[in-house]
Amino acid sequence: MAILSLKVRVAEKGVLKTIQFDPTTIVYDACKIIREKILAEAPIGPPKDYGLFLADDDPKKGVWMENGKTLEYYLIRSGDLLEYKKKIRTLKVRMLDGAVKTLMVDDSLPVGQLMIVICARIGRSLEVAFGFGITNHDEYSLVRDLPQETEKVNTLKKDDVNKLGTLTLGRSKEKKMEQLRKLLHTDEELNWIDHSKTLREQGVDENETVLLRRKFFFSDQNIDSRDPVQLNLLYVQCRDGILDGTHPVTKDEAVQFASFQCQIQFGDYVEAKHRQGFLDLHEFLPKDYARSRDIERRIYQEYRGLRGMPEVEAKVEYVKRCRDLKTYGVTFFLVKV
Image (cartoon, rainbow, N blue to C red; front, side, top):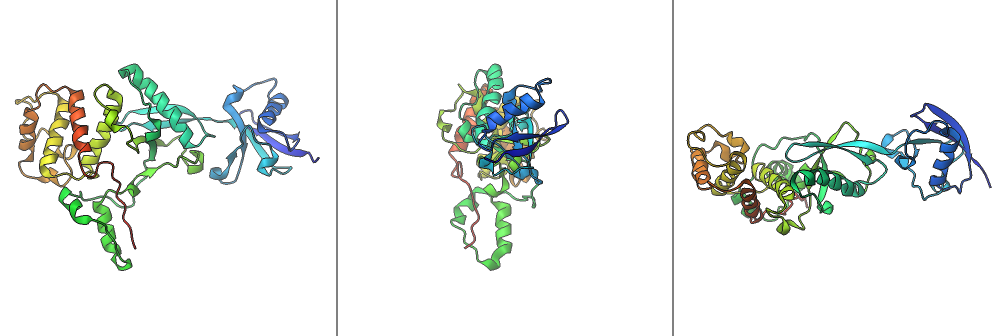
């Protein structure tokens, strides 16, 4: 049987050496041979943290070789280059409340498997602080914060939702399509990371910060004041959906949501403090309502009636009302036929 003569690079040691392998050697054993022949006198770290990488001119097309597969499985030829390197990399994850966590993850695993680790580790730190973590990892995903080509300049009002129905546009109505795209907050706006691919395959490097966001809502009804961590994550996502127009609301509903947000952020209403001009209305109302006359006074009227309500209970009520909206759990798509 032919012998494979492969170039093996250990960049961490600055070593490049040619080693002969049997094509039927499994990757796990090949790693062991490399450690014995190159790293026996100067180990570089726990073997479980390292692996074999079949490099390509395009970094996104390189392949982490699976421990249980043989070398011949990867159609390797004599003279090919393999890299023995660390699989563990850093990943910066931003929560919806702005907090950023830096985690160590396995670069060889698809994102779907990483979500178990990400939610467990973030949940563990939250559990220390609050007593609860993130257990429903299958409902979460990561979003890349990439620049949008067009800025969303308007907010879809609740009355508009009832008029839309099913939108079918001909080829000659591209302009109308673009106008609707500015009104409807569609799933196209979010750059969800593909769970079936690795971070490297999708070009997510260690300098990039990704957003941890709820994508599915299987267990919403089970989230209440007894689970403050999950409640806060859900509240922040609901709040952002109200403010950016993902969940269209009437003016009266917008005022009610804003009053609960005030109770959550500021505690009880204080007449001497909460006066006209205190609020940055763009942080409490959808864009179109923020310009409405006398709306801050209306918010304070509602806010005054919430005296004595704890922050957690205010979040529960906010989320409960958001769940009752017609667009909650709905994703908009623009379709051309």
